[in-house]
Each structure stands twice: as structure tokens, then as C-alpha cells.
Length: 158
Image (cartoon, rainbow, N blue to C red):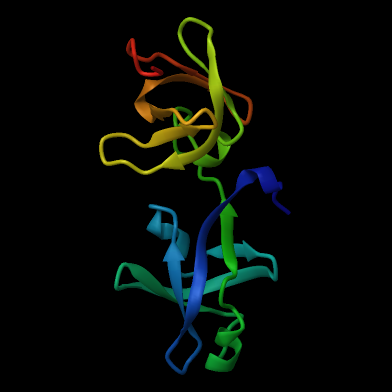
């Protein structure tokens, strides 16, 4: 069994699709290989095994071994899919590691806690409980689930 801290939520079942038990899945991960045939995902209902998946209107149609027909597929709406973290790069910042972190700037001034991460084309933004938005590219170091150090330009917090 995998340690829950080593798992990420990678998608959610939106609804049944068709008559043969396909599921329409919103994949939250940019790693589409999470849906490769043979992949094992975890849910609150236990492990599931991907038989097939292909893109469909910005989402994926997925067939799971555990979902043999439309009637069963109907019961999977809203089920969150989880997978193990991929060891891609030590410098990767995982979004789930940021929530609740204290944010301290280069002058050791605490600026708040991370309450959300907002997608932004230039750089995702840390949303702090103080209301401040800090571009992710200003992060200089991270202690997961604890502390984020940032180096920001003068005036960002004013």
C-alpha cells in the first residue's frame, strides 16, 4: 500500500458515456500517461485498472476493468482518481505541498499563508490569506507543507 502523502489526486469521473461502461474523466494532471492501459489508480472504492483511454473534447473517455457496463458506470460519477507521485525532478514544486505554508520574503517578513494556487499564463500565483498574490516563479525554496521562501520586487505587497 502506498503512503497517502505519496499520492496525488489526478482526476475525477464526470459521468458515464455510452452503453459499454466508458467513463468521461476530467484529468487534472498534465501527465496523460496516468491513463495508459495497465495503469493502476486508487479511489475511495479501492484500486482500479485502466483498460483504455483516449482524448474526448478536452477530457478523456476511460474504460476501467472494474466498470463492465453503463449501469455500473453511472455509480462512478464524482469518484476522485489518485496515483503515485512520479519522481520527475527534485526541483518540481507540487501544488499540494504549498497549501498552508507560511510565506516569508527575502527580508524575513512573514507575508501570510498559502490558501490557494491560481492558474495564470505567465506564472501560477500563490494566493495568500492576506489577499496577496505571489507569482510562483518568485519562490526560492520550499519546505513542503511548512514554509515557502520568496524573493519579490519592492512594492509587491503594498
